[in-house]
Each structure stands twice: as structure tokens, then as C-alpha cells.
Length: 213
Image (cartoon, rainbow, N blue to C red; front, side, top):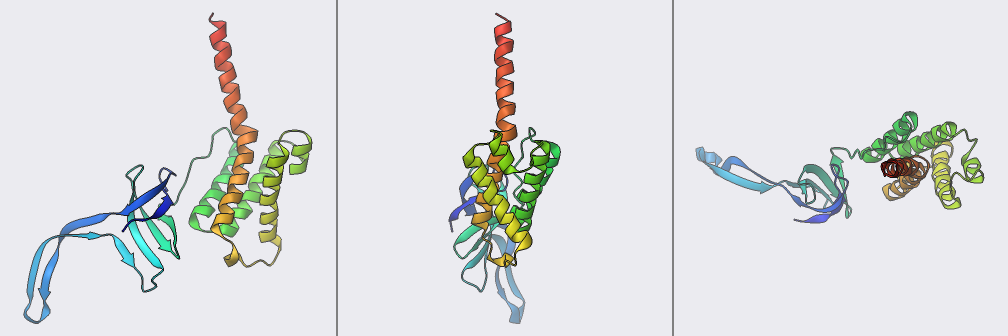
């Protein structure tokens, strides 16, 4: 029973998945009234269909990295539930900013969407302190981020403020929205820390090569 595409928690690649088949010794036939039992080799698909027809659990194999994980298909949407997806955060990001963003990603993977947005706000606040900025607007006005990045990060900030201050039912939050808001924060961190570090590395490599002429 092929399932829809899902992001593998191991390699973070969107991949089609197939249920794993579990093989082993089992009961092939049984008659309880006369203790008649026939055992042998059995093989079953690792799929559990709940009484709710819209909910299916599956032990799956990623077709990209061949590693196993547990996923659930609920109301047509498939997502991995074990192990939790922990994609790496670049070392170029300062530790206190990186820790906050890693917690945001962990909350996202665990389905704690409100917690994810609150940790996104903490990430932004720590980033502002690291850059000596009073706000995201200050970063934009100083030319450290583009207007587009400002708009995206500011939207993530507004969502986190809404969760923190307004009486919004957390059950109404959607994973798709949180995932995109997390991507906004990630793009900001990439522009402020990751890309400058990469550029500095390439510049040094070029200068070293030119120095050996």
C-alpha cells in the first residue's frame, strides 16, 4: 500500500514510502476447540488501520536513504512521527541563536506548533541581540537584510506574538503554516550567518591560491 510523499526524518528528503514487511515465525492456522495449531513462516505488511478510516499507521522505509521510520496517514496527510525529524542547523549560526532555532525545529517535529512559534520568536530576539539591533526593522534600515527577508521574518514574529498574547485556539494552527514560517526564520539566519561564512571561506581559499602563484 504505497502512501503519499512524506519528509523522511533521517535524510529530510521528500520521498515516496512503502510499508515494511515483517517476517518471522507465526501461527498459520489454529482451531481453539481442539488445540490444533500449525506454525510456519509468515510475512505481513507493517500497517495498522484504525477504526477511523482516515487514520493509518505504518512502519515505512524511505526510498531515498533506505532507513526505517514510523509514519501516520491522517485525513489524507502523511507525516513521520518517529524518530523526530532533527535536521542539522548550521554551525555558522551563533550558539545561543542556534539552540533556540533547534528547539523550534524540535517543537515542529513533535507537533507542538505553538511552542514552535514561540521558539521562533526567541530565535529572532537572540539574533537581534547578537547583531546589536533593536528590531527587525533596524536590521532592514541598516541594510543587513533585504525588504523581502524583513517582510517574511516580521510575519513570523507577528504569528508568534499572536500565539503568545492573543486568545487564539492553538488547535486551529496548521502545520503547513508553521513549516513555512519556520522557513522564513531559517532564510533570515541563512542570509545573516551562513552565506557570509561561506563567502568568507571561498574568498580565503581564492586568496590562498592566488598567493601561491
